[in-house]
Amino acid sequence: MSLTALSHCGPRCSLAVRHLVQQRSLWAGTFRSAQLTALPKAPGFVRPPRQLSSSTVAQCAAAAPSVLSRADVITDHPFNNITDTIFQKIGVNLHQQPGHPIGIIKGAIHDYFDSHHPTTFTKFDDLAPIVAATANFDEVLVPADHVSRSPNDTYYVAPETVLRCHTSAHQAEILRQGERAFLVTGDVYRRDSIDATHYPVFHQMEGVRVFGPQDWQASGMEGAQYAEVELKRTLEGLAQHLFGEVEMRWIDAYFPFTEPSFELEIFFKGQWLEVLGCGVMQQQILDKNLGPGQKAWAFGLGLERLAMVLFDIPDIRLFWTSDQRFLGQFKAGNMTTKFKSYSKYPPCYKDVAFWISDAFTENNLCEVVRDIAGDLAEEVKLIDDFTHPKTGRTSHCYRIAYRSMERSLTDDEVNALQEEVRSTVATKLNVELR
Ligand code: FA5
Ligand code: MG
Image (cartoon, rainbow, N blue to C red; front, top):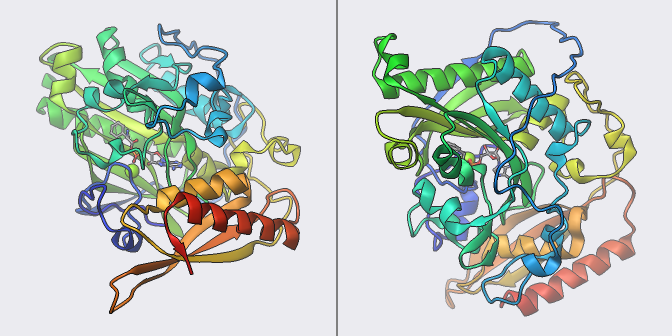
């Protein structure tokens, strides 16, 4: 699927438009051009299994507490929008499990940076996911009216505290510690759509590298241009390290914290899949937190997306399964595994149609579906959007695909889930069922 983002789309942006343009990036950007970069082809190339070196992971003042009680996260504050489904994911830390695909890809990326720049990058992988809203947004220059601040998109513990929606939330604090090159891995949380490549909890790795005049002067380039060239060289090298042969392209993008900004897409299962965002860091962030006269690049990788491409994993829900038929296929340090589907249970489709109100959002519907069906919900898709010519009322019809990765679902079970979705939608979302 193309995750191309069109021009900035505020919280009031019509759902119909959002759907039509597949407007899914939190950091709604501007699509200007797509530059194809086919990495060198190596037909028949098979990478030998590699042992990944264990790398030192820096401890940080804000390391995650080992136990977080439900009451710390789900409160009755009117702003709190965290559900039990989400709470249960906090502290699981898939990225810290060396034999899990997310842990393996993290290790492989650490390896790449360690081999190209030994002892340069400090690594953080246990920073607490509950952060100040100021760190998540203000310190990376997210405007006060940016769509990502909306409780429709971000999980709020309280008005001033959020579940981080990106690892960029740690950029400023780490720069203030004086670090000039670092990698931060962690779980991030977003209210988002339901399909094979989107999940409300996923893992990002943030990378930042700062340069001083001595770095770019020797190159004959300006600082910003040097940082941009270094950024693309570094990430293309990473893609080659992970995938060998792969078709990829750069898309011009928009992030409040970088200029210029880019996204990298990889061709996967017949579609362009967006795997990362990056750019040259806004000068203000560097000046304020590290000091003047420096330039830097920054990136944020989606680890699930990279692992899906590397291991041929078809559905993002699989990362959360405890089924040994999945987990048993992967081994710490082994990047050559290709996931073998152990079952293909049939999906079951159910439609729900209703007249929406102004307050209705697709993310709210997805949250209801997730809370009732959990990982049995495979996809929620708008299949009909109709405005009555006389009354002006708008009706939406959504098709929900239910499917288990582990077993066949019974009709009774699916009907019961769908019934509960229907009644909850009617009572909680202020819509009128059709
Ligand atoms: C960001 O989060 C920026 N903070 C990235 C960044 C960092 C840009 C530093 C510039 C400098 P974005 O919203 O595009 O950007 O998300 C980054 C990546 O996270 C995406 O490319 C995708 O791989 C992954 N991602 C986003 N949403 C989801 C989701 N719901 N499920 C799984 N992966 C996701
Ligand atoms: Mg994006």
